[in-house]
Length: 146
Image 1: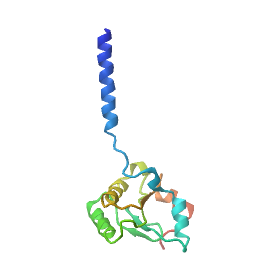
Image 2: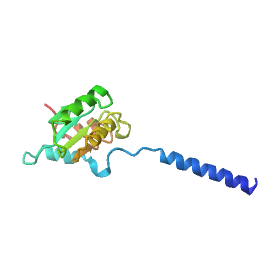
Image 3: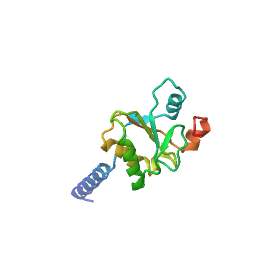
Image 4: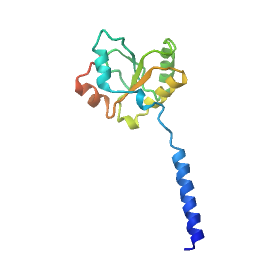
């Protein structure tokens, strides 16, 4: 192969890879906006600590004191979530969770977290549930709804 052809092919591959990398969407949260389940459980179990607003944006509210919004992938539930959020100050301590499936595949958390960002909330977190609510919450005997 001629050097000019190799250079042209290499340049094409390089540009194509840069274009693909540029199209990946970052998550709507930062790493410091993830909350470990053990930390939330400790907060819930301590009556002396100011309690966060906990919203379930998945198929069912399991965590103690959480407000059931319903799956965040559905517009009607996002509208309900927006209505609930409208009652809160922008600096409210908010935690959202789903737990329906492995975290990286969850269809509910991204739309709900994006809504919090769009509404300019400043103190919101996403519960880091890498597997599902049973494995990462219930099996640890963390506090659940009665």
